[in-house]
Amino acid sequence: MSERAYRRLQRDERRELLLARATELFAQHGYDGLSMSQLAREAQISKALLYHYFPSKRRLFEAALEEGAAELRQRTEPDPARPPGEQLAMTLDAFLQWVQERPAAYATLLQSGSGEVREIITDVRATTAARILSGLGADGRRPATRAAVHGWLGFLDGATLDWIAHDDLSREELHGMLLGVFAGALIASGASGGLPTQNLPA
Amino acid sequence: MSERAYRRLQRDERRELLLARATELFAQHGYDGLSMSQLAREAQISKALLYHYFPSKRRLFEAALEEGAAELRQRTEPDPARPPGEQLAMTLDAFLQWVQERPAAYATLLQSGSGEVREIITDVRATTAARILSGLGADGRRPATRAAVHGWLGFLDGATLDWIAHDDLSREELHGMLLGVFAGALIASGASGGLPTQNLPA
Image (cartoon, rainbow over all chains, first blue to last red; front, side, top):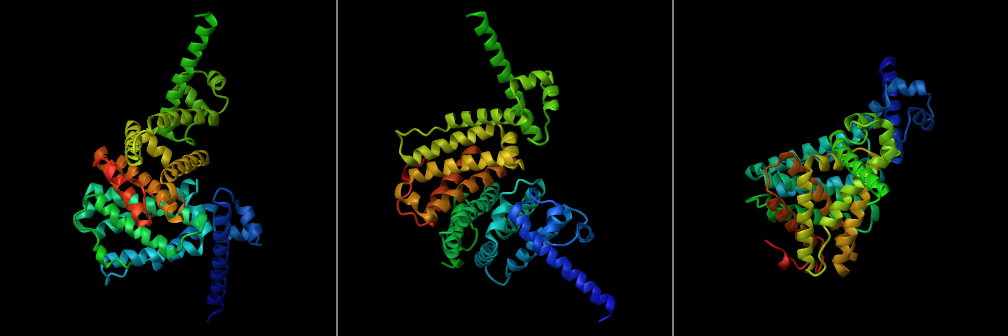
């Protein structure tokens, strides 16, 4: 390895470490509750070096969110070889596991008042809804089914926040309830086909 | 009427008019997007007079929210003489009517990034959840039922925002779906009794 490549590796590692620390701190204090000065102090580096890696708090925050989102995407990637019901069940379980590893950070993110965070959440929400709706075929183009899927994503938020706050339900119980409500919401919306719920694990 | 009482009436009316105008403006611009100077300009009064009625933007905003919330409370007051299922159905319909009268304002409120607004929303959410859970008797003390009710309130938000954004579902369709999902969520949470759903209007 050339000396230059070696130096770049060190730089990338330092950046990764900084990002991991920033993610923890944002989770504790929220976006608005943290300044670049505090971040530098907590990470025990100079403010100049922090700005060298991340030109602004917004860029640092976006990088931290992007890293979390990339991990989430990778872990919740549906397996197209499986039936849609199983894909949803597996994706949902991967999501709940991901939340379970960072409950406080996730709750802070979801309840954040920051405009930037809310914009990112709205984007992720729209993408997830579109993915689910496209998996529902013709039903996914019905207004009532679209409203039901957006409603269910709201249910997922509400129930997940309650789960984090009280910590008295197993992940399996929550998972089963969420799948049951998904099937119920499709029925209540009058969807004709929907997911092959007979394939859902109990 | 004494002259003093007459003057006070005028003052109260002016305050009411100001409040109504402020409510419209907050709905359009959001809490952070509006200054007291703009409010005074838009309401065509002096800034001094505006501050005479409302000592700060926060107080004005709280008064506007409080007025909306008081109307909502009054209109969604459950009728204790009816069975619980009917109470929920009627309260929910009154809520959807209330939203239908101010869709843009409600969507802005629900998606607001302001810490103050989110605090108020969280408070209202907790009160509503407690009211529903207490109506469910022993089931309302089960963790899974509690999570289901909080989930359902999230469903209500998600589906209502979608309804406002697309305006292609009737209030009756949305109402039926929300009640169906409520019953489904109770079943999925394993609640034993729950609301007497046979009393729910179709």
